[in-house]
Image 1: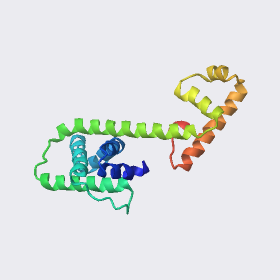
Image 2: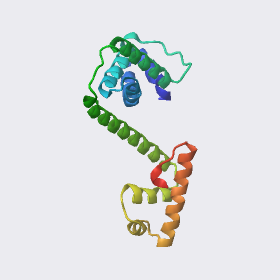
Image 3: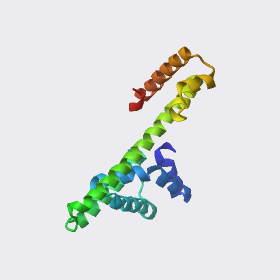
Length: 186
């Protein structure tokens, strides 16, 4: 999707599926980003909708000077700043009411980050050789014991220990090369 630019060009040319792809790809991240400005996940969701509405109705020009994602997030930031300016005198929520919002926001952000981490790990695993991929999949994703996995892969205990060690090292190298550290691999 070359970071959304081609989908946006298709949308501008009349293909409504282009905007649907953009919304699917960037909605969750944009909500979390805008939540950093307004400190309320529900308002951030509304501002995200406003951002996409602005794309659909005003059809601003994407010059390509930055990545599509950066451009989209800057539009979202402008929407959030406009909202804050309009409502700066209205927001007087008691601190007791904010506790529930904060816990919901944290759990949403944590689940989003966890999901993103899973996607990155799955992509990295797909780059591994077949034996490494299989052993990691069986033990860490399908929850087989080492003994059960050794029976499935027809390997001795010693071979399994070596295979698991090498597979984890190879995965760790791929993830570090992509500047990602997955805590469960340590």
